[in-house]
Image (cartoon, rainbow, N blue to C red):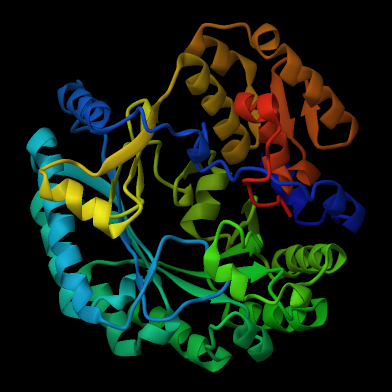
Length: 469
């Protein structure tokens, strides 16, 4: 893997290759993917999974990951596909926090208090919609019910327009050690087109404040393919990002799906860059970040060499969960709040997507799980293969065979035929021990992993997913 990483630092990715793999595909924050969840999986199934964790021999030895969804935003960003509630009425947060506390109580009624937590993430929406006092109360409630370990990874998503240096200091004092700034693009014309205006100087100042305060890691989110974006304008954004030098960069391709996401209907379609321009922007971003000394973590993530994510990749400890790439070992994820997706044992579960249904179920004393999935043995084996490819860039036949008592080449006969085709294209290398993603293939690792997705291969209905490029 180290050799592959070194090669990837210098390997050019041609626009032709980027075009070839500009197809829809899952991001594989889970396998099976969330679109496969069923309503037949409900609260009873989730309670059973929680009880099995409680009664398991290693329950306290396996720390939890917590995700809390804060859905509120003051202003609508037209590109957004997240589950959010647009409001300037900050008083709406208080009752929501009470419902979150009730949801936690229903969890601890089964698990007991004091379950160890090694990872906590607040997402949204805009978690900084909450006041500092509300955030303190939320953190205090979580600490009363869970044992958040010393040195736990505690992260929060931040809208730069909602914070000051003083607020950053308050977040740090609450225990947050990792923050993520939503930037998307620094070009003023693009910002106006997506209804999210935040000057470069504002983010630059906050970045300097975050470093002075002492956050372990600062992430910046970027999007290419937005309206009025051009390769020339995006090149300026890339230079500005390199100038402020965040520890991590998440680079996403904009997926224009107005039929699914109502806010995107406000985007003027003719202002969207065409496929050649998008490919150009991605190509120059890859080159710019690698030249600036970033390590390509995989898919759409970059990190400085001394960041924990880059270190985990080098050491083969990289994992993937519903928040993306992670340094945390594969662990159970308790998801709190509307629309949140969790993982407990061999199950996935998702909460109600509307505030009304979420609150109504909690008022009835029920956990607000409305759909999910109990994974089959085949699902688990394929998940192991897909996550090995997505995180380590290789799958070792023997490890899968011993874990799942199968003959890899026979069980995955059709998939190995596809791997041979990808090998001819320079995407993977195959030998007697396993499949390794090449330096070139690492930029298209989703396309490699897709070959082992039984559901995707069966129906070929990929329109529900964002494009790989």
